[in-house]
Image 1 (cartoon, helix red, strand yellow):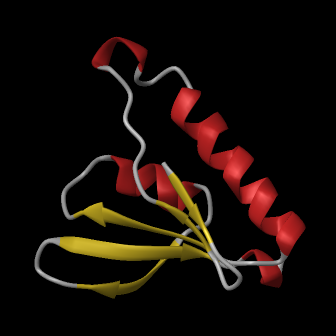
Image 2: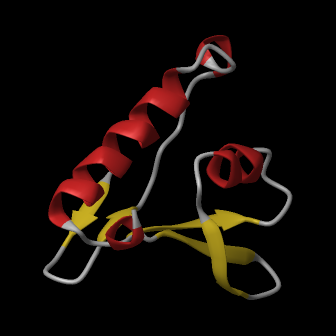
Length: 82
């Protein structure tokens, strides 16, 4: 699920069944959103649970932590900088 408004795009939820993980599908899906964000010059944001292995994917794709609480890390890809 994707949320879009005038100031940002938000990746609200993404999930892959176990048999489809580690095949590059998540990378391609998020990369597509990054390209969309670049085209609109808006940041792309998401929240991810601490300890979720997807954090490595998001960091590899260029996301940075912008805030955190004991449960979630909010991350952002600042497309307007690229």
